Length: 88
Image 1: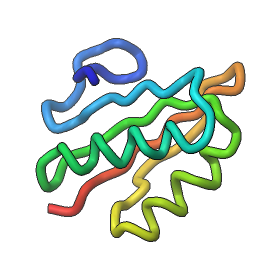
Image 2 (image 1 turned 90 degrees about the horizontal axis):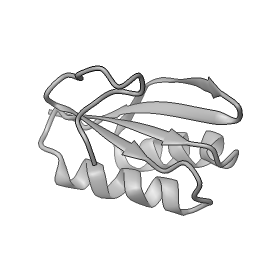
Image 3 (image 1 turned 135 degrees about the horizontal axis):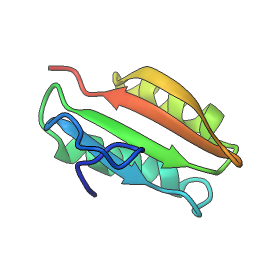
Image 4 (image 1 turned 180 degrees about the horizontal axis):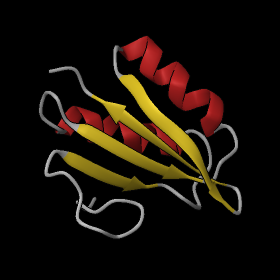
C-alpha cells in the first residue's frame, strides 16, 4: 500500500491507496477490508479496481461493516475507484 492518490500526487497523510486492479472478486474487497482494519480511526482508503462486481461488493461490504463510501467513480477503461472512510 502507498500513500499517493490515483493521479500519483501526494495524498492526505490519513489516506491509504489500495490498487486491486487485475484481481477478481473477492480480492478487491478483501484488500479493502485489510487496509481499513490496519488503518487508524478516521482513516480514508482509496480502492482502485477493475472487477465489475466491485460496484456491488464494495458498497455492500461498507454497509455491513459500518464503514462509509464517501466517493466513487469511473477511472475509464473499466476501472473504478471507491473512497471509503473508517469511523473516528
